[in-house]
Image (cartoon, rainbow, N blue to C red):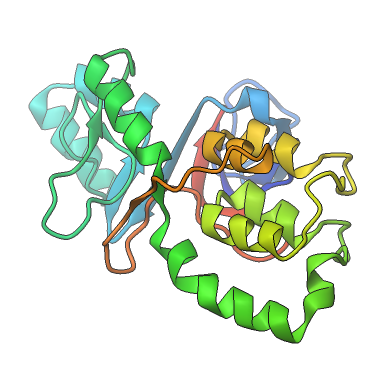
Length: 237
């Protein structure tokens, strides 16, 4: 079951069901659904017609004949890449794509994932100056909860924006304050899988960051909007 128009609050994933179930009569395509994060099985997003993620789709494509795979891709109208490997982020300009095996059990997979975890999102780097400027004009925004009961720190932590989180902490944001769901910044970083931000919140700050030189490229698949948190793409469970 694939879901789009994703919202994530650190506990549950909500969105719109993309396909009608074959056996369940209580769910229909285009209907709203909510499920716990633990039920997430796969994710996929599309950028410029190219697919990133989609591990289960790769499993299906790998078992197809060449003709069937080409027909499948034409029906979707998307570039899924080479069968048998999965690309999870756009490659930087002039760089070789970073591919993962579907099982994620190869030494190269672990090396690639470790590098990606320490790569700062270029959008976060580019917005640091603007964030500092806005907070200088409106310092109360550091401590005020928004209409949904979240601090700006909570939102930036969940989005994985290390650079902005670092700025907020330096300006006095409280990492121990809980949001409306009772989650502290550290709890949100843990559930979202941001180990560098967990270390930052625990005072184990690292100055050895791998900074992306990509021009407006994505360093991770989670592209966030304003409240509530939203993922542009699809997930399956």
